[in-house]
Length: 410
Image: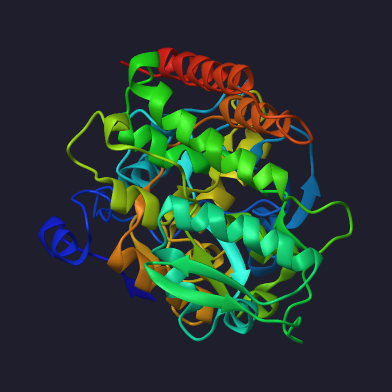
C-alpha cells in the first residue's frame, strides 16, 4: 500500500495551478480492527462496479450475500442515495470512528473513495495513430487542437488516409492505412458516467450554483458533450475513447484488460471570462484529469436489528486495515478517503502518479443530480445543435445544480 500525503506547497510547485492537485484534507484517525461479530447472512444492494467489495467481504468472513433491493440493510451506491432513511453514523461508536477517519461529521453515509475520471484509450492504439508522444500530446492539447483532432480522426476512421493534426503545438500525421493495433470504427463510446464531467465547470464557478457563475463554464461543457455526441459509436461499434471512472472499467472488463490504458482529460471549451475564481486557471482545468468521488456506504435505518448488525460489520470491515482496505484499493481500484492506494498494478500506479502530479477534485453529488445530468446529456444525441439547444441545455444544468445546492446543509 502506498500512502499519498502531499502538502499544498509541494503540489502547487508540481502543478500548473493552485488547488487542482490537492486532495481534500482528511482525519488521520483510525478505526478499531475488530468489528462486531458478523452475522451469517448479509442483505445488501450494490451497484455493479462496487459489488466486488461486498463479495470480498463475504468470502473473507464466510457470510452469505443476499442481493436485495433498495430496502436492503446495506447499500453500496455510486452516488449518495436518495429516498433512503439512512442510519446516522453517530448512532454507533465504531461507525462514528469510521466517519472520523474519513474526515466527516454528522455523516449518514461513508465514502468508499475516489478514482480517476476522463477519457480512457488504449495507449498502443494512440501510439499507432500518432507516434510515441501521442498520449502526452493529447493530454496537453488545447480545446481547438482537441476538437480539430476529433473531427479529423472521425473522418479517418471512416476512410483512412494520411492527415495532419496539431497537438500541443506540434504536428502529427495520421497514417495512410489503418494500423493493426487500431480496431476502432468510432471515436467515442457512450460514457459510463457523466456527473464528474462537470467538475471543471464547478471549479471555474468557484462552487457557486448560480446562473451568473455557471452559465459560461457549462456552455463549455456543452461544446464537449456535443462533440462527443456527434462522433459516438453505434451499438456494436468499437471506439477509441470511453469517458468514465476507472472503477467502471475495472468492473466491466477486469484489471488485466485495463492494463495498457491511457487517460486523457475530459476537455471543455472554457474561456478566461468563465472563471469566477483565481484559484484555478484554464490550463489546469483543461489538462488535468478529475479525481472523482466513487461509492457510498449507507445503512438503512428501517432494517431490523439483526440485519443492521450484519450491515455494520460489512461497513466496518471495509474501513479497517488489511483485507478490507485491499478490497477498496486493489479490488475496486480506489484511493481511500484517508488517502491510501495500491500501486501493485499498472492502473493503480497510474493513479498514484497522477494524484501526485495534478488532479481536479470532484464535487460529490447525489443520485438524483447525477441521473438528471445524464438525462440532459443523453437528449443531445442524434440532434441538430443550435443556439437554442445550447441555451436550454445550460439552463437545465444550472437548474439541476441550484436544486442540489439548496438541499445541502448550510
